[in-house]
Image (cartoon, rainbow, N blue to C red; front, side, top):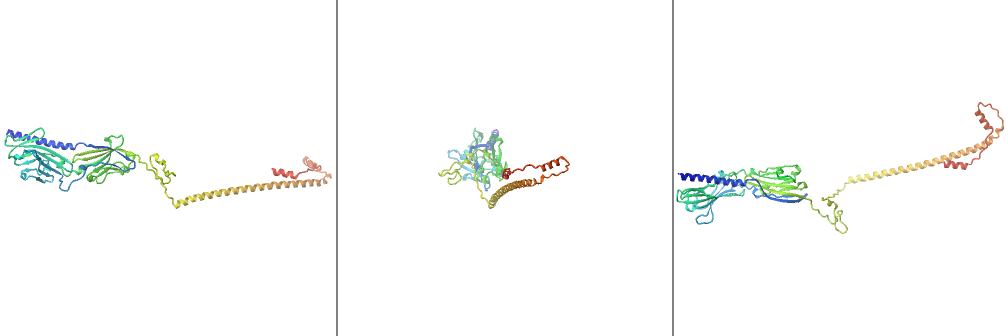
Length: 443
């Protein structure tokens, strides 16, 4: 009785340890993300940059045959004959069991609810001597590309007291009595082996960007992609419109980021994060993006205006020395624009003609006024000479009459002086009319 309780206790401890080991192995697969690759990408400014991030493990391949992507199978190897391992039984997550050897049908059983409760233990109803050997419990997840294995060694004995289980430091060793049932324990209750319909909710991809000098923990989120079809874009609109990932990313496993067109401000470090919480996939790919100046294109040899010389060798384009090409676009002018320019020219010409006519008329008027002034001066001079001549003649005629004494009573001295001058006239002057005319004309 004491030996039986010890064997049962040892078996329970082995069952617990195997469960912990398998769960720990699955937990390690779902640990933090690891850097898969790191590369430096150089693209010219204005080009369409593509940062390639691909993983077939992220391809959404859930089948339509009741999720046959998970399978458990038991193999036997290292028997008494020392032959190769052979397949005993396998079962898919849909519940189908397949026993390979006819002699094992009805003897080897797996729990029908293995993929619901995580118990994949193999029951051998009646142990025989050929059943002795090394058994392996193999779990495959084709969708997540996971493979886990657990080894148990079975020994057959005729001694009932020797039956039991122990740990040899690497695996469990089960000693079973001939003809008695034996249970080979394999338990793994990780969600990846028990849950069926949560893959879609736990599959996400996102892109981050670190500007130069910014650490990884302060990176800016660019895109979030979910297997359900939901997408979230962050950042300003002008940045979101230039960055995109293909619509069929989860169908092809291609989550490459396309930036079109590329600008110098896009330079920095980009990270592609692939998270498949269901499968325990956490990967990160890093891209150091550098933006270079676009390559200078040589101008055509025969095209005028591009520095082409008579020798046929194109000269350097001065616009390319600045690092950016300048394109001169000549837009053809419309008919209305032509008539507008013609109106400006005609209006300017008419204004010039009017100004010229005004200057000519003013000049002619001034010259005509100068001639009239000269004629008036000359006429005055001639009239004055003639009066002087008449006056000289008149004084000669009056000299005959001044000899008579006229007694007048003068009221004041002025009248007396005037009368004296009348009686004693001044001698006549000889006036040269030509000389006086020349003086007046010179004035």
